[in-house]
Image 1 (cartoon, rainbow, N blue to C red):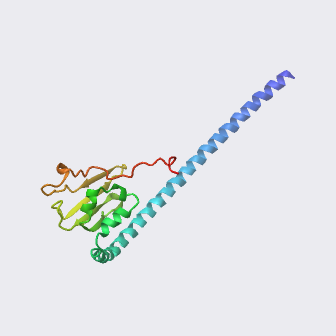
Image 2: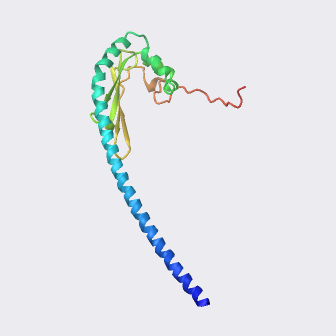
Image 3: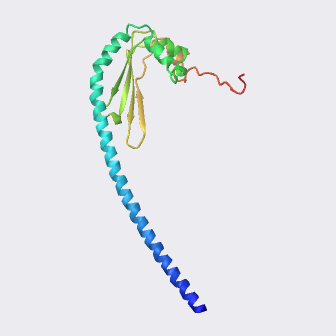
Length: 187
């Protein structure tokens, strides 16, 4: 009877290996099928993204004349852009006192998408004549690359005599930030 037990366990082990091989084979097939479905889903998502971009581009063109009308009204509101930037929860903290003086001269703001919106955009700040710099337009351009990097370029500012970094106006600073308040100390 001892011999029978040995045979049974060898047979059982071989059966488990066959079951294991069968399960592993089924698992591999299932994973391959899942990857095929995932690839199909990615194609559909890419197509959807392309269609959404087409619609966005179409409506950006439709919005353009409305933006122009809005800009004309905005020009009649004193310090509109300064107020808008100061009221923004993130941007308001970034503007120094000197930046605020400059933004009083901002007359309009234009955002221009590249032909392919995924490639980038530029923001043009249009200024009235001001005591700070010669430029009437300052542009910042954001270019997005497929590998996930972004290139940011901007207009080199032509500062007027007595203005700019050399005269105590450091535009490289992050602006006036709120001082840190330890909430544990606030009662």
